[in-house]
Amino acid sequence: MAESLTTVALFVLLASAAGLVVVLRSRIAIERLMAVQLLGTGGAATLLLLGTASAQPALTDVALLLVLLSAFSCAAFTLGETASDEPDERP
Image (cartoon, rainbow, N blue to C red):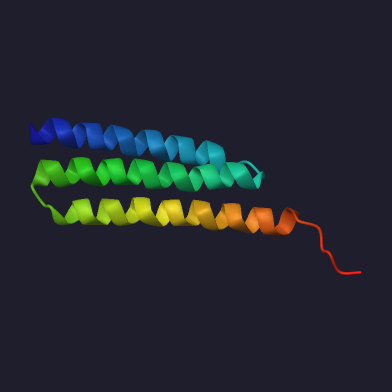
């Protein structure tokens, strides 16, 4: 069972890495944000699978922290984009 979970974790990691390479080549800021989200999701899935395979519950906490940081970075990017899109109201 542990070998199959490790194999699936490796597959998820490779798929995330391939997607990350494609998305990071773009010059559009939104696509770079998608790279952060992809890294957070793929990394969390990999850590959860490896934590289950090795019976280490500490990896679950690290995976949840990675997802939380990914979500906060997405929110910060969104707030930064909306703040820069508003026109300056000074005369």
